[in-house]
Length: 189
Image (tube, rainbow, N blue to C red; front, side):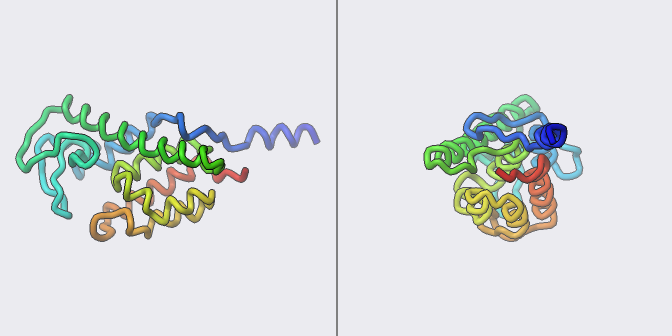
């Protein structure tokens, strides 16, 4: 009996206080791939261009929606500036996730305890959809009830977090985020 208990404890999913988590190295590779120039293997756009929804972006998905400056069509930057924009935008996204976790913790909602992969996926979602988009989503309602599997499934259809329609690229990204969200397993406690 003791041996079985030790095996079960070793397989337990590690949950962390989401109010203090930081993005992992995996996140940084994923966000560069997802927000880099299409077909560039994660390289930043050093010249601003229009997205399909009319917004203008530069670097790794920097639109000015999260942090300044707001790019204008034709603006040019170097790789170091792209990295600064990425760091600022990712920090803003992570701060949004941590604020949500603080609210859950203050409300004594156990959903503030999450895995590292859940935190990374949440930051990626906020980076892409914005803090308000994520906060108003059906996805986050499932997270709040700790219905982890349904939350991951909801990512694939939740239009409340997107500008326009699901594109092939966004669908693929949401599939990766859903897989990342559950990568460490589904917490049961």
